[in-house]
Image (cartoon, rainbow, N blue to C red; front, top):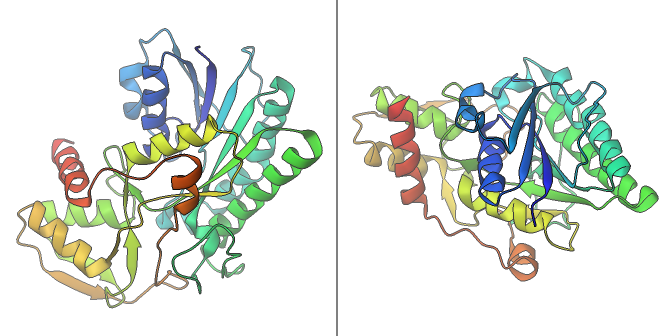
Length: 310
C-alpha cells in the first residue's frame, strides 16, 4: 500500500538515494531541502515523476503542508567536518528547532518519524566497537560539538515526543556512508581521497593513518533506514558496516582501484577526531534482519566511477 512520505534533506547525498528507493516502492515522496549542502542535481531525475514533489524550504522555519503525511524521515543536517566551523548555527538549528518542527508535524499527522542520528554521538569512543547502550565521549565545547551535541539533542526530542506525546519516533545512528552523489568538496575522507587520486595528487591523511573507520555503501544504509521505519522498533539503532579498516589502508585501496600514481601525505590530526569507529550492529541484525552486503572494493569502484563522470 502506497504511502505519502516526507524526506527532509531529500536533495542530499543519502536523502536523494532514499527518495529513489521510496519512489521505487510506488510511494508519494515529498522532498524538503534548503540546498545548503544538498543539490537539485541529485533529484533532477525525479522532478517529472508525478509521485515526487520538491519544496525549497528550511525545516528550522515553520512548515505548512496540505498533504496528509504517513512517514517522515529527517536527514536534514549538514554532516561534513568542513561545515562545522562554517555554518555551526545552521547545523545546530536543523537538529534542534528543525527536529522539533518535524516531530510536531508527525504528531499532527499521526505519522511515523525517523531521525537520522550519527555515530558522532559516541564522540572519541572509549568503548570499541560501539553499542547503542554506550553513552559516548563527546567534547561539548569543541568545533564538532555543533553537530555531535545537536544530534544528541535530536535524539532527546525523539524520546520526549515518543514518551509524552505518543509519536512513533525512531532513531538511526548512521556510521560512515559513501557512494554516488557525495559532494566533490565534501571534506570527508572518501570524496577527498578519490578526488585527490583521480588528479594524481597526494592523499592527505590526518594523523598517523592508524585511526580506523568502517564504511557502509549508501544502498545498504538506505535499506536499513526503510527497514527500521517499517519495524516496530524505535532504536537507537546502529546502521553501518562493521568491517574496520585503517585510514592508511583505505587510502592505499583508493589509489589501487583508481589506478593512481598518488602518494600519501601526513598532516596534523584535527582536534577531537575519533581514533576508532566501528558499529556493533547485532541489534540491527537481530531485529531488522539487516546487514550490509556491498563489499568495500565493489562500493569503491562504483563511487570512483561516479566521481570520474562528474
